[in-house]
Image 1 (cartoon, rainbow, N blue to C red):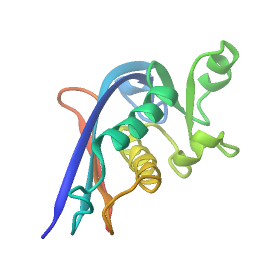
Image 2 (tube, rainbow, N blue to C red; image 1 turned 30 degrees about the horizontal axis):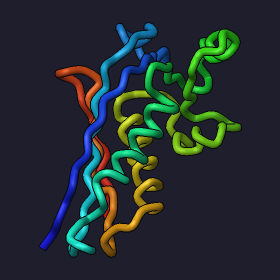
Image 3 (cartoon, one colour; image 1 turned 60 degrees about the vertical axis):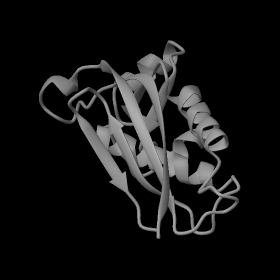
Image 4 (tube, rainbow, N blue to C red; image 1 turned 180 degrees about the horizontal axis):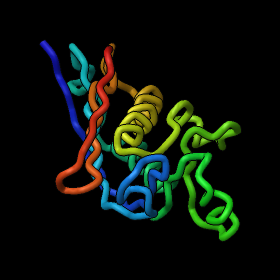
Length: 157
């Protein structure tokens, strides 16, 4: 037997992928939607994890560090420009990352695939701070950057 719960959240964030060719080389924004699923083989107190606490932890992190900001690779030439303007900025793959950017270690650029993995790491850390069923884990993260473009990240228990 297996149980799962899924929480959703949306946020507005810009990014660019200058290492690729095409439209995504340009700075542009999306209305992102994330779905995070937590799975467990057994329930604890009737739940996998308490929805409210898990949603709050995930949403607080996203709203604090990503929403209405810009995600860039640490090597992006726009990093010093936007940082110099005091813009909200989240760097992927920084050599000396800020504490919140530790989650993006090894993820060089903010592709939708990398954002899914980033949020999987964030959700996993949040889950481990909460009461949960034994063996509960973040099993799947889906991220949509548009109505037609999405990526996912799946973890093993």
